[in-house]
Amino acid sequence: MASMLLKRGKRPMLVAADLKRPAAIDQLEVIGSQVGVPVYTERDHQNAVKLCKRSITHALKNDRDVVILDTAGRLAIDEELMGELAKVAASTNPHQIYLVLDAMTGQDAVLTAKAFNEQLELDGCILTKFDSDTRGGAALSVKHVTGKPIKFIGVGEKMEALEEFHPDRIAGRILGMGDVLTLVEQAQQQYDREEAAKLEAKMAKGKYTLDDFDGQLEKMKKMGSMKDVIKKIPGMGQMIDDQEIDDGEIVKMQATIRSMTPKERHNPSIIDASRRRRISRGAGCEREDVSMLVKQFTMTRDMMKKAAGMSMWDRMKFATQMGNVMADGGSIKKMKSSTTATRRRANKKDKRKQRKRRRK
Image (cartoon, rainbow, N blue to C red; front, side):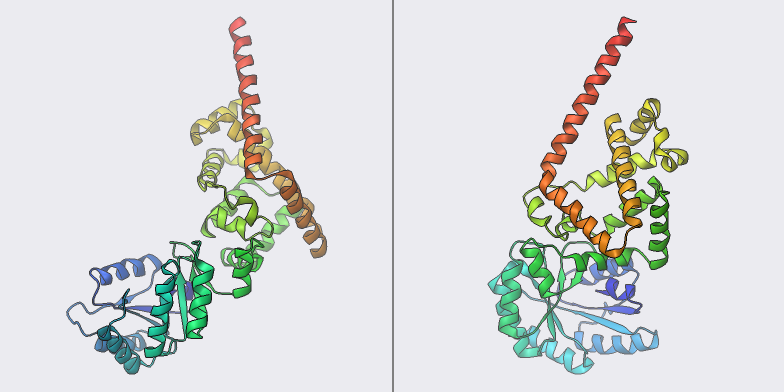
């Protein structure tokens, strides 16, 4: 949450108010340093109420405009915890009180939410592990029992894997209908308008290079796993639901691109057999992988050039047609099988060439 607030121009501060769990303070300090957010701690004191109150004063003195109080949590409800939380709420008068729940705990999460809401008057809930299979039931049950909205959901283990909860979008994901709006928002976080305009101008002129492609791959990695990204595309969720997609392929593609010279990345058409051998050795891959990457890039560049000159309406129709081709043309497995067949043919050609050399 602190990471999300930073991106929105806020100056958050974390408060280590969980004095019960061993190493909770150390853990929060590590996380704070990772995202670049200060953490207020008082290791010598064991009074969470006074600590939280002093942290507000400290935040005001240090020009921090959002304070996140990380209080102690429990799997089971007990009077001591509830009493402490009620006193923290009374002494700090927070603008928002969120209860963080594990979406995989099922009915226990519902009972916990009900008990906390009766004591503290929650403003909303945050469900973690929402990328699990039990997400729908937990969200509906918590909302029904507490009457409070689900504010945020955790969809992974990385710092960026926190999203605002939109019921219609989540319903679309569960039903395999995709979630284009969230995908667009994630993309907007990675690109600013000026950068996107420059990239589009390059595409329109057909000057899109492998360096640009490498940069886009890097940004894609920050948007989450490939499977999560593809699932947000309408019609693609059901196609890949039972299939494994290796995110290591992106790393492999980047290694291949970065094994090329600047001249090769700018003009991949000059990559001949000897250059492929050198690039494949540098990237630790097969020569066929280099050929496949160059072909895929060339096709993508040509498609982008065609789409760049279209109106918004024509682009939408073009994207729909491409989606239909992908849906009709087969799944990831078919794509993989065609790649395997291409590699076999290439291997046969290499063997024939080697036999000819031996004869000579």
